[in-house]
Image (tube, rainbow, N blue to C red; front, side, top):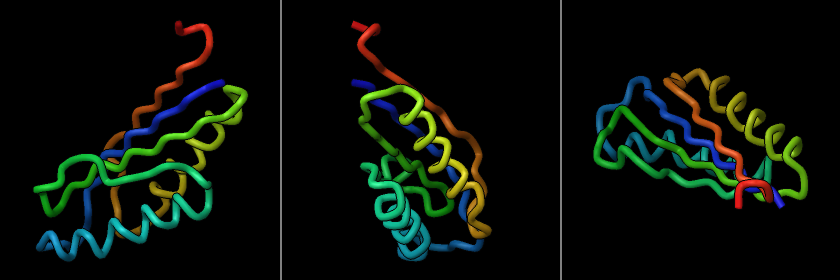
Length: 98
C-alpha cells in the first residue's frame, strides 16, 4: 500500500475578503474530490485572504498510480486562471518506509 500527499500553496487573484476566498477555494476542492476521488481540504493560510494551502491525500496499491493522481491534481490547480500555484510538495510513503 502506498500513501501520497500533495501540498499546494496558492496565491489567489482578485480576492479582498475571506468570504471571497471561500468562493474561489471551495469549488477547486470540490472539483479535485469529484474528479479524482481523493481526500482534499483547505489545510493552511486560513486567516489570509489571498493565500490558500490545499492538501490532497490518496491511497493506492502501487506507487505509480499515486504519483499519477497527485500530478493530475497539481495540473488541474495550476491550470485554473484565477489561481497562481506558488509551490507543490509531493510526498510518498510505501512499505519500504517502515
